[in-house]
Amino acid sequence: MPTAALLDIDGTLVDTNYHHTIAWYRSFRQAEVFVPMWWLHRHIGIGSDQFVEYAAGKQVAEEHGDQLKAAHTAHYSILIEETAPFPGARDLVADLKDRGRTVVLASSAAAHELDHYLDQLDARDLADDWTSSADVEATKPNPDLIEAGLEKAGTREAVLVGDTIWDIEAAGKAGIETVALLTGGFSEAELRDAGAVAVYDSLEKLRADIGSTPLAG
Image (cartoon, rainbow, N blue to C red; front, side, top):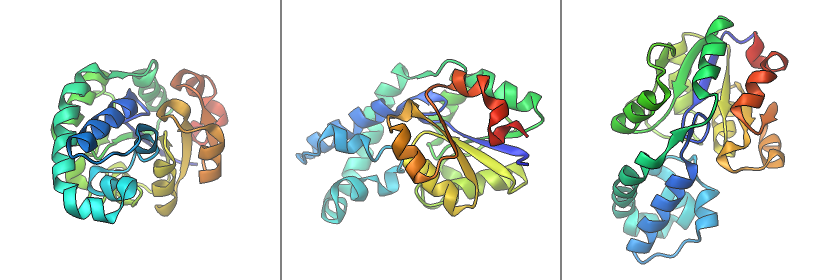
């Protein structure tokens, strides 16, 4: 049975996905490139190093990529103050620790953003470790983040808890399963089609049913 749990932060433990969507939308509008907000949301979960090309194509990425990434950072630095942990986020970490799981918080966020989330979650003394952008060369859907989390956990026997199809794809490439949440805005059907072994609409419902998931140990 898995001995470790990798917990995605953005959209899974902390309610951030729509804030990122707005930040990207404002960035594209600033560059006079129109990309519908719904389409931007479909790509949240992909790191900023690849986001522009996935969402708007190679030409836009070549012409405006650096500008758009810098603008997103600036817009999100304001919106991050409006983010908050989902109910049950810290409790899930505690539940997993009580079950003897090694818990790594898996994020490719910049250090200052990660610090903000760790403060919000009050999880520094609970989690065994965490990752940041400094730990990965290529973000999701590449498996670098998952591999970094597994290395910090000291085992490949792990399960990811995530919220997007990109989380599931990255975990699959690293050879581990994903328990998914609807909190990122993807449907249950989409998450299951991507390979999630279980889907819950909240952290609280996951906590209540944790014994039926691979997280149980």
